[in-house]
Length: 94
Length: 393
Image (tube, rainbow over all chains, first blue to last red; front, side, top):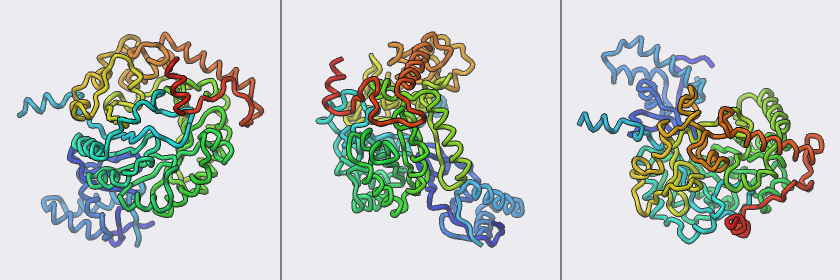
């Protein structure tokens, strides 16, 4: 599907997202497995636990990371959403 | 402060990401390749209480464990299973129930779901009633099918696990069909590995190379035709590999097993190794067992290795293979896993494979197996009578 900033996004119900103190990172848990997330992936997915638009995810991140170039940040988020969707981590709808 | 961080960052700092809680060795099934110890009935009186398991969960979580396998025996024989699942959920575990489904009904599965179980794995012993019930040693096929349907109704992600051996591997196409009908998310077609009960039954269980090739071809063909919805994993017996596996992802790197009576082990079979005292949660802390105990440090890393592993360029990949397999086949827990064709004892494996071929040649009828055709040695089912018989030998 075409992904734009108006696309609705939510973490797939087949995965559990949580912070792991011992690993000092966010993880995605699934049957008998785990994905360790890098800090930016963790920040993005932490904002997708409830249904939201990609635009809202971007503006929330822009508020939290005001020192980052806003355009580059928006592009990074959209790129990550594509990757995460390919991995089956997300449910998307336009 | 800086010093203590440096000291703590050695190999003992690895995290036991996986806790396997073997809640009870009791089981209504009698599988002849069971991973429980031969003398399993001896621990029955000493099973951990509900509160003791909760402490194990809490302590494992503190060490960083995040995946929890609730196993046995049959975990459903524990009347406190729902309570343990709720505790695991509140601690932040992702919990996996590894079950035969015997002991469940629709109401209990719903209660387990309500308690917060994340995922269910149901075992099958064959693709139809005759074969399944024969190798389970218990009438169970129809109930498994019913419970798999209930599990999907409740929305559980579901893995179906088929343990393969010479006398059911011809059913692999039907196993895949059954898994698809039951809407499994994931299918494990896992050949039995040969420790404990399975090793005692190897003459009746180890498939021939041709049977494996045929089964793998059917699996690959299925994968091609059914892209997407259902993931399929096919596991070959170690005996047909040239290099051993890094058992449990490497000794004491990732997995922590607690047995029904509270022994703490790096794998399910480690009690078979001689001369190593098993830590027990009633005597020692889980943290001590993981970080300090002689058992967990015995084969960590590569320093313990003799030749040919010590100078092998692949030693970091396979870590010398499985310690239990090395001990069971060579009598030396430090030996290279004989699965490796660089092992001086590799002929043990070659002989076993040749014998499996001879037995297959005696009995096989095309690519299909008559369940009543006489195996060379009768299967010894896992039950208290056979446990006694085998423990005496």
